[in-house]
Image 1: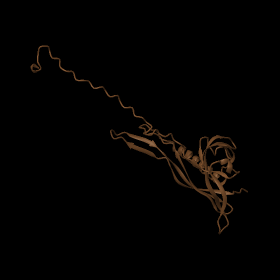
Image 2 (image 1 turned 45 degrees about the vertical axis):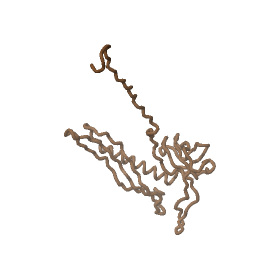
Image 3 (image 1 turned 90 degrees about the vertical axis):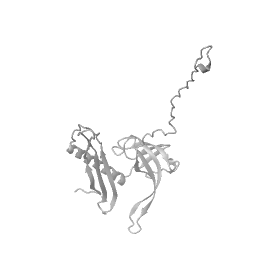
Image 4 (image 1 turned 120 degrees about the horizontal axis):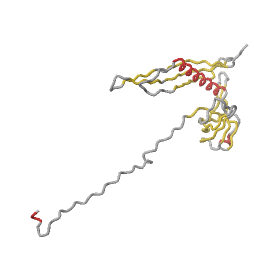
Length: 232
């Protein structure tokens, strides 16, 4: 007989990749593009107790196509399959991270080693790390409902292997991370957004003024010898 410790339940909130049509003002031609994605609401239920262990949402967007007058129709079956696969992978990864959190297993100065690798983490990703403290229990049921958490630091994933990952501490809210490190105490909490290159500020951009042409001095009329000013 097969038995499961947890059940992953998902509700589809959105699932589409619609065709967008925009008519040109200067002619009867139209521009066609496609964009969309899907969103799930997930609940991970303890199969023994019936308690909801994880409740979250997952959103996946598919690459949009540029507006074109000769846009080829999309393969709806392939798009639906790709979107379903991406949603399933994202939902599974979020459930795994929630049930079996990625923790810091070693710290050496500003370098860290993480407890998970494989497909779960990606090189270049940035994560917020929290320092976990004492357990918090529901006074009525006695069930552990969480732990005290304090923001610790931000790290960047540098290398991923099949079993572990390696990263670098980018910033710290608690000072020396190695001083508070204990196995299982430092845990990845959320994926941080990508850092985009900041455009140069107005103050840093020095405007080069065009050269000012030199003023030409007026040429005085030449008065022939022997003539007076009144004759001109």
